[in-house]
Length: 144
Image (cartoon, rainbow, N blue to C red; front, side, top):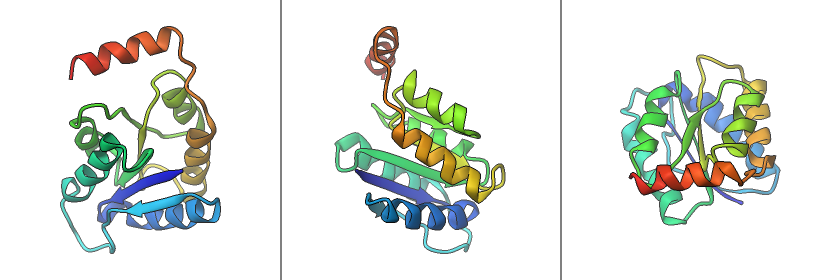
């Protein structure tokens, strides 16, 4: 799977860990930055990643920051993006199963590295349930 990856300085460490993990699993990763812990403005990196997912250049996207909230808000400004802030494995599973989340946002200050990897794996492995959830997703997408 081709996955967009982006962070600000506060999510850089987890981004690098996740990037290496995804590559080891055989995924193709497109890294939109940032490339250090030097302070940056997260929209400069998150928006291009979300746009790549929306255009179909990447199948899914993972964005990171301190809390993950600003990153999710930025990603969700792009039509067809459904970016969920995930804080544990169950929130990641539900984001896929019920919301067909094509992006997730993680907060490096909120979760440790092993938890971040577990969240990513659960989100990647969980299928969208469809059914009544598909009707709801169609309503969301028709309002953007």
